[in-house]
Image 1 (cartoon, rainbow, N blue to C red):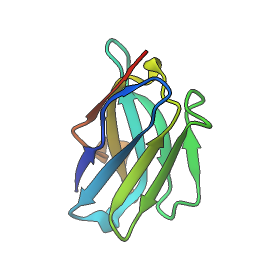
Image 2: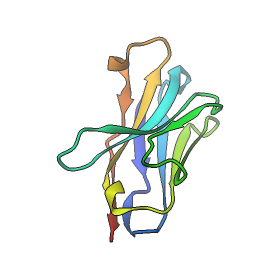
Image 3: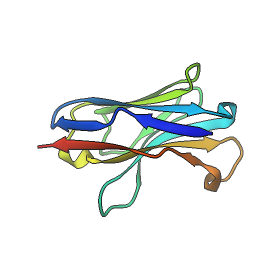
Image 4: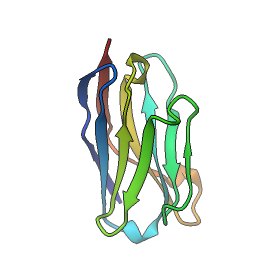
Length: 119
């Protein structure tokens, strides 16, 4: 499985961005997908997750009400709509894919896309 993120960039506080994560390869093996982020000097943290069918989502408290995760399995793509962005949202955002029945150590990761929010 290969994951490629896009959509990052520089935006002013209060603005919006939409990240995309395109999956290729053995996508039928992908179960839960998620977005993580890592700011300089901080640990990587979960931003949002979504089950394969899209019926269940979860969000970090810091982004609830501002970010929306979705996925289009027909296009093998996951999205993160980010609204009302804040400077503290600045980080590298990573796409993650959990594989059916496998330990998290077998998860796949994208290369990351930089999001920078200016005040």
